[in-house]
Length: 240
Image 1 (cartoon, rainbow, N blue to C red):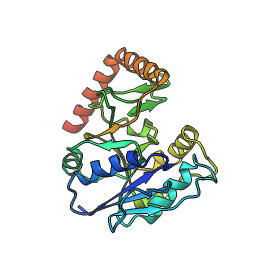
Image 2: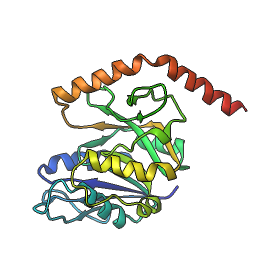
Image 3: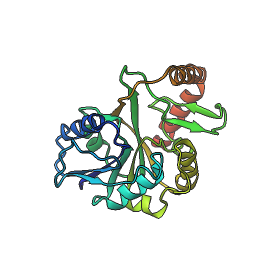
Image 4: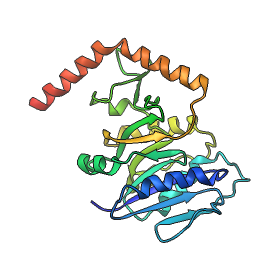
């Protein structure tokens, strides 16, 4: 396995959040890696051959996340890129799960949870027959990757794949750019889900987001019979 480029997008308002993210990566003891921070001034962060900073004019637009992602992946020196926002914290066993699962994919979804252990709205399908328009799915249901939008605040991708279809910098916000990019890149990519890798969203969930996530979880529970059929179908395909 080659090295890993961790591409962090930040506005730089709170260096201690970026440092917390860096520390969680450093503690994984990965043999070969780099951390690329795009945005902010990072005045209190120690930069070196591993931790690098790409300046970004935040006065242009602090929410120009598509531009930051494109810049950081282009600057990456490793083929495996992990692209994420600065509030992401890596679980202590993340690298073990990464090695065990392997890298036979173009794009890989991981498990994202809140600090209280509650799952986030990621790992969901869109417009899958028999399910709501957008629906969370259990982590053990496989084979639906082509129906899953890419989670904008955290994803793994091969650098060469990303550069073939970079994000559209005409989009400045978050959700719209994620959906537009997903529509372009998902149909022509080999996508897999690796629940063995866990990251934590290290920011407080507001009441509205908490209520929406809780509702999505409760809604998904109503479709357990569909998920069980999908599990059985996947096992049957493996046997055949």
